[in-house]
Image (tube, rainbow, N blue to C red; front, side):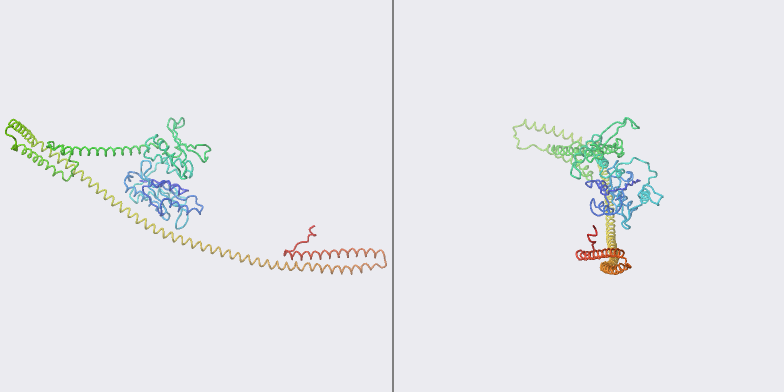
Length: 592
């Protein structure tokens, strides 16, 4: 059973840095279509979208699974979760590059995928339009991500969520809603890191981890903005009497107009509230208790082994008869293999009998002949002591031959042997199951590697073909543009030649015009003089009429002469202007 969530990413680099971690430590399983290490995927996304009008560089999906179907503590389950995320990406966008990062550090430690798909179709070169919503949309016949995920779960025989309950969104779902590089997103990221720290088991330890973060250096080499957690009790509203948290962060850029920017943790994510943080506290406390229990068992086992070894050494140093079979078995049980338990159980009684026989032979042996005959009292004392020793040894031997003791010892040894055999069988079965799981994991990894190699080869070939096609199309477009520019230049040249022809004709007319003016002026002066003289002489003997007419003729002749003089001067000015600058210029005296 799995659920999904979609959010567009305007910065693939920032989203990849968050999903992978600053040191590439967050992803327990990673699958990427783009070859190269961390940062290669976001670099390709930026290269494909920077010359377009697209605001979204990548589509960010989150796919969460239940721990009832996939145990996050088993590597094979984590790898299968990662494979399902990759299959979901290819089911929705088969012609686009994707990155799948699997996390197990969220609330409750459940496995979930962060699926990033570049907003670019490698075949069409267009932006992605499908699977941009949670549910199916009838308008445009667009499908939602949840329907594709449900189909994938049915194909793999997994359960499907029948009805999704609306739950408060955690930070990973709301992160894209805040501006990249803003103080709100930085507060959320640092709060998430602090809650994911294994040392965070209560509010005091959370504040200690946040205080430790304030001493770290950022990517620019300077100290990160100082952040602190403030606790208050709500005095009004529906949460009266409940504890509330507020985050304060140092505002160096003046986004809020104050020295510090504050934000209610509930406005960032439900994980950052006191109730949501309890899930992280409980999880880390449980992990801490389990680790403490494992450490205690290891210490106890080490102490028990040390006591057994000390008892065994003490038993060997005594050199006497061990009359307590249970203590002997307890000291030797940890040191002997299980397969030899039955043989050693049979050898206990034989060894005990041989040791007792040697003691009897030593005691009953005759005294040394070197003893002086005069020392009678010493010999008698020695004999009495040997007799007492013989009596005590025989008593111990008779007690050791007691049938009930031997039977009890035998039953105890048999029970321990059966118990050890059962433990060995369970251990063998566990090792066989682990070997089978390892073999299955190796086969899955091998298959995944082969699939990745094949996909990489296909994508490289497609990329080469695409680059060659794009280069050819670009070259063709450049040639077409050059041809168009050449045609336009030729047309402009033809127009310029036509204009030059008309300009030459106009220049010729301008050259002939001054001469025509001078000739016309001379002709008019001569014609006017002759006509005026005839008109002045035709007075019929009237003296005053003749005088008046001659005055009029003189004035007209003077005006014609002045006009001829002005025309000659204007022509001279034009000729001088053409000689100096190659263009006509109106005489200066005409301007005044």
